[in-house]
Amino acid sequence: MEYVDKIKISIFFFLFLINLKLNAQDKDSTYNAPFLTKNKYMKYLFFADNNTKASIMNISYRFLYIPRSTAFSAKGMHLTVGLILARFFTRQIIFGICYDLKQFSGFTKQNLSQSFIDDFNSNFISTYGNEKDSSRAQTLRDAINNSQGAGIHGNAFENFGISFSPFPLKYGGFLIEVKKGNRIFPIFGDYTKKHLSRDDGSYIYLQLNNSYSVELSFKPYRFYNSERIVAEKSKLKDLYKFIVISFYYEKLTFKNATFNSVSLDQIVSQNFISQYSNINTWGIKIGMAIY
Image (cartoon, one colour):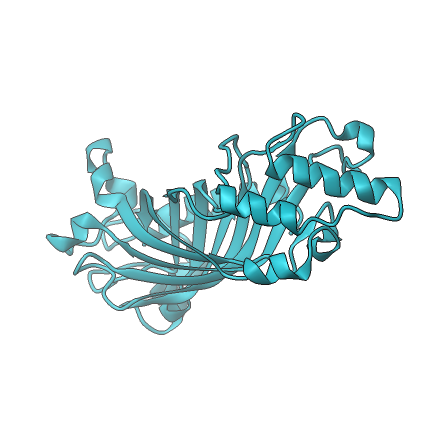
């Protein structure tokens, strides 16, 4: 995954504004969109009524916290948007596709376990055919060991998945999401002299592909109130209604991982990659969500 450009961020905020508007429609609304209201199906699709349990989109902004793990882990604030495909034929459930984006990596240090560091060092390939390959490998080793001014700080990720909720407005509004994506772990330090900088001047990074995650989310407000929240009519004091808490599971793997666009199996032995082919972590998310 290359870093997502500013266009995607703009699209997300555009979708957020649309989502607020679509969630706000009811019989008393003064909003007028002739190209939607003249067609019976389009009106059904985009405008809510008293029987509506889910809109056509959902969106959330949450903080992911994962306690110290054996190796790497994703964490931090990120945005999720979803398209509810079930909305095309029913207003009662959520079933659709979702997309996560954490673009800004931040500066949180990756707390790697000593056993992971020792395993990396013992499986490190130290002999290379040219200076650039040798510098690349040594830079990653320095970052893993947090030495020579190099380190691994922050993370970024991108996920695609599916979401499902049979009762969006009651019983806590439980929502299940299953996702697959990539994790990026930036390397910080003085490696420009080693000719490892990317062409666009950004930092180099370790990328873990084929990562899987499962989330079980709920809204505390939904345990005692099943009214449909009209976002546009909500006041600041109503923000608690949008609070969402998620139990989070993630599986990372070093299979097919890359560093500075080079396969990781050129830097460490296959034994290390196999040993860390299933990194299981658990965590929690908390934030705001509309669904």
